[in-house]
Length: 475
Ligand code: F6P
Image 1 (cartoon, protein in one colour):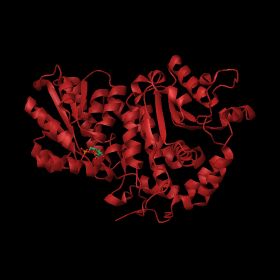
Image 2 (cartoon, helix red, strand yellow):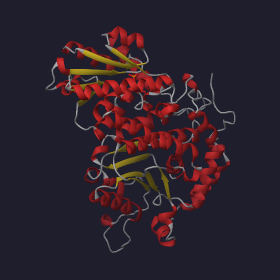
Image 3 (cartoon, protein in one colour):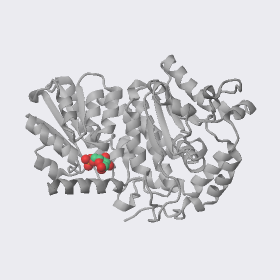
Image 4 (tube, protein in one colour):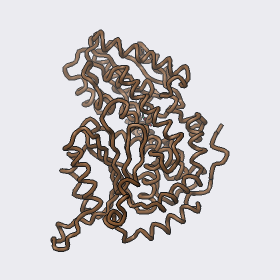
């Protein structure tokens, strides 16, 4: 049964009053430069700031004013955001095309989590703690792809403490598994096969290759218990149909991450995300950080014409964040059909891309500063390293203000007026990584509401899979 909110707005967003007001308002922004906005309003850098637990969002360098924000909030209200938010957080079946809930928040709800979630977390804790203390396995290899890989890979890479060597193989190209197994021996290598469906070609191919290599022990994480049993997994941890792959790092899909970080750190990661869930549920729309992130993204994409969006974490530990967010945002909101099955005539998810700063500065920032496309940027600034912080801030200022010196030759001029936000985290720890990921999850959900799309299915990936299968059977 489809459990969309009673008060849902089924009209296309373009027919909302606030949408046409925003379109008119966007016209009035033509020719307004961020330089002037800062010069004319000394309070701008404190006015356009919002806080959530552990995180500060500075969006003063976005091309918005108080009226823009008011209209964007009206749009969110007209789209029924409060009702949709309630439906998401209470586990209603809002993924209508698959008749499922999208209840990832229940995975980090502590004592309010369903019993099966708490039991699974306890099993994960006992497995990870034993593996980390006994060291009977020197290497853990996670076999999975998409949401069954990107989340645990990101968390392990960002926060792994080196107690266990945790590797990942996602590609059907055998080279990745070969690399993950370099220097390993079958007796001391444990494989975690993560696949919600347990049918994904890449993961199954890698799991079979691991068997041929002589693997002795497999833990499976799946909702397809029969298939995992048939494969011969020694232990099976559950996944639930109400958790989407790209929202699943909080579940047993995170087992490899827990092995890398320790169970307490993983719990802190969950607790950090839970704080953001509470903020998302309770903060007024105009102060709600994930809501603001979503509204600003929609403003840039739908009214200022941005086709892409860059995420630049100024942190080597977060170097995998852009690829994680690519799946989260683009698999969720890269859609052209709305909830009513109509073709969409407005922009949905922009192409998300990025790289760790400062490395990115010596690669593609030329285009950010002087290219013909305007690319809104999220800078992620972990305020523990002054070199990184100074660089992130300098890039944001250079994009916003550019140069104002007519004596410079054209090739040395920077137009500026290029929007960005800075997300400040005090340090990179498990709680803050949980907070950061949860912020983007809710941002994605809010944008789905604004655009009237189901963010929780991914039918667009099926055709290619079927075609590849056919090509293989024809051989
Ligand atoms: O092909 C896309 C996808 O279905 C993702 O949504 C998912 O995260 C990934 O494949 C892996 O799926 P599974 O966990 O079922 O192997």
